[in-house]
Length: 167
Image (cartoon, rainbow, N blue to C red; front, side, top):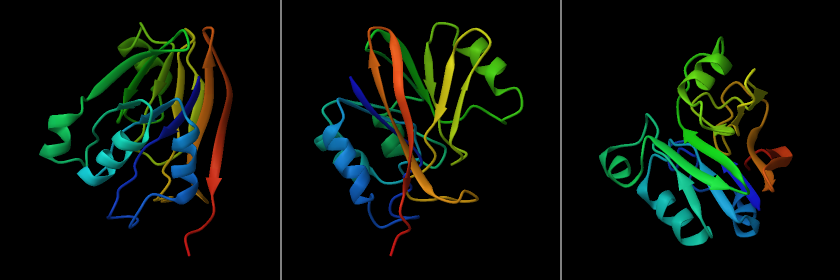
C-alpha cells in the first residue's frame, strides 16, 4: 500500500496551488494522509476528488467549514499498521514520550504544524512522521512531503521528498 504524507498546504495563503509533483504523487498513492492546515476548502475538495482514499485532520489555521468536515484526530488501519493523524504534538522536546503516552494504541503517528520534517521512533515503538510542508518551507531549505509503503504490518520505503523552488 503506497502512502503519500503531506501537511500544512496553506493554499492560497502560502501558494496559489499545490505543486504539480505532489499532485502526481497523489495519483500514484493508494492512501493520502494530510495532517492539517489546509486553509481553504477547495484544497480539501481537490484531494477528496483526486485521492483513492484520504485520511485527514484539521489544523490550527483551518476555519469552521473545514473543522465541520474533518476530525481533530483521525485513525486508520493501513497495511496492517495502526495509523493516527493529528496536526499539533507540542514542542520537539519530549515529543516521543508525550505522543507515546497519548496514543498507546498506534504504530505510526503522522503530524504537522511545525513545517519541519521529522522521523523518529519512541521507546515503545511508535513511529512519528512529519512530512513538512509542500508550499511553505519556513526555516527549512526545501518544501517537502513524504511517501512510504505499508504492508504486512511493516512501514518501509519512508522517503522525504524535496520540491524544487517555485518559479
